[in-house]
Each structure stands twice: as structure tokens, then as C-alpha cells.
Amino acid sequence: MTLLSIEGVSRKFGDVIALDEVSLDIRAGEFFALLGPSGCGKTTLLRILAGFEWPDRGAVRLDGADLLRQPPHRRPVNLMFQSYALFPHMTVAKNVAYGLEREGLPREEIKKRVGEVLAKVGLDTMAGRRPSQLSGGQQQRVALARAIVKRPRMLLLDEPLSALDKKVRAEMQLELKRLQVEVGITFVVVTHDQEEAMSLADRIAVMDNGRIEQVDAPIALYDRPRTRFVADFIGANNLFTGTITGNGFEVPGLGYLPCKPELPNGLAVLAVRPERVRLGDPGRGAADGIVADVSFFGGISHIAVDVSGHDRKVLAATQGAARITPGAAVGLFWNPDDAVLVPA
Image (cartoon, rainbow, N blue to C red; front, top):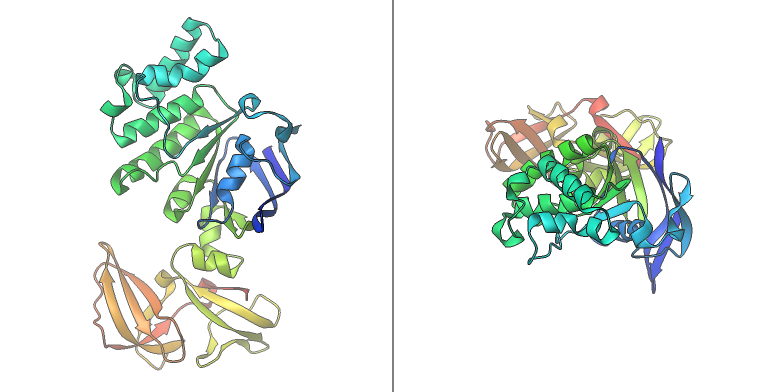
């Protein structure tokens, strides 16, 4: 069931096009991510949903009602800021209760709802502390509790984990997902972190230059990108530009590469993930090369191969420590089913 419908939303700042005819449907109860590089328009779209920006044209509907006609404080939407924006002079409980007090709810109702939400985020024993007495992860939970205590239909999160170190961020990714399922609120998160989006979201909209490149589940985005940008932006990929002909996919300087040519004849880009590339004896594979570098990342090794006639190193990934050294001559192999063709 669609909760939020975005139809042809555009926004310009002077000569800069921030959003260009963006259309999206976000389902009730899902964790949805807007993913893209800086300046792609994802934060502008989030601010339009929150009511801090207005589009030049287009429509936004929540449960069929025109969201753009409602002022920010009347929208059943809440925004969790990147900086958390906690009141330093207030306790945790007072920070969480602030929005409810502004609405004039009865004191007992406020106390009950604050207690329930602090228990959900694991901070019920810290209700009397001030933000300065909390860790970064705990402050993030307070900000989350303050956002969901008002029971919005949708929660917007702007780079919610960017201020945390890597280990705490990984823990909070799991926590955010658990809380989203538990409270049953639709979450829309803006991030430039692929790993964050892939681990959190049910579906992801990949954006570039104010446009939606692809909307899909994380696995589908990774395995079956539909554009060159998505293939290059999501994870590591080996890209080969060539031409689809009646005989297959031909790359200048390399010849025909293994794939299933499912696109019409013409220019295209072949994408092969590093973990799909196998190394073997030269002279028998899709191409030959010389190992340029071997990097160990704890559990996985990346092997960069120089291939004559190709302007980028080809990357292969293998489990554990690689049993190969720089300077070795190798052949590159992959299954045609593991290669994806996208329009050039």
C-alpha cells in the first residue's frame, strides 16, 4: 500500500536544477533510502517532504491528501536532524517530551509516552541525564526517541549516523532497523553511504543530478543495475565500454567478452563485480593481464590486474589471503550470467 506519492517534483536554485521531475512511491511501513553523491538532490527532496522547501512544480500526497498544502508543524511527518539538535540544558526525558508539551497534552499522557519510547530505545535508566553526559550513540537514540514519540506517519532521517564512528555506526544500523520494525513507522533516510543504505533499506532510490536513476531492493540494485551510474556507484565494479553486435559484445582492444547480450545492438557498458572475476592461466580467459597490486582487507583480498588495451585496472576479489603476487601473469574468467549489460 502506497503511503507517500511524489509526482513530477522539480526544484531550481537559480541556474542549478536540484530536482528534475522526480516521481516516487513509498509504501506504508517500509524503510526507504534516498542514496546518492553530494549535490544529487536527495536532501532537497527530504526538506520538501518536511515542509522546509517548496517545489517549483509537482505534487506530494500522503495517504492521498495534498501534503504541500499543510504547514510543517501540521504535517504527520517528523524530521530527525543530522546534528541531533538536542537541548543541552534539558534532561533526556525533557528533550523527548518537548514536542508533546508544545502540543499541550496532559502531563500523565506525556509521562507515559516518554517512558514507553525511552524503554524502546534502551534509555529508560538515563532519563535524568543531560546530553553532555551521553555518548554519541546514546544522543542519537535520544534524537530518535524525540522524533517517534509524536507518532508520525513517516519519519525523515538526514544522514542519521554520519557523526558516529564506524563501530558504533554498525551497531546503530541494526538498532535503527529493529526500531523501525518495532514501531511500524515508515522511515525515509537520506545518505551518501552505500553500506548504510544497503544494510538498512527495504528499497533504495539512487539519485544523480536531481534525477532518479533506479529504484529497487538492495540485492536487485547490486546484481542488476539498469544504468551506468548505478553500476559504477553501487559497490565496486569492472566496467567495459563496447558495442553489442550480432556476434556478442565487442570491446576495442579486448575482443568479445562473455555476457548475454540482452540489449539491442549498439553502444553499451558491461559490468562485472570483482567477486565474480576468477583468476587462472593466461591465454584461456576473457582477457589476460599482469597483477599490479594485492590488498588484504581481513577476510577478503582485492587483486588489481593491468589489462593491455583497457584504461582501468580490473579488480578481482577472493576470500581470505590471496595466493598470488604482483607481477604474475593471469587470465580473467567470469560466467556470462554474472555480467550485466547497461546502456552506454
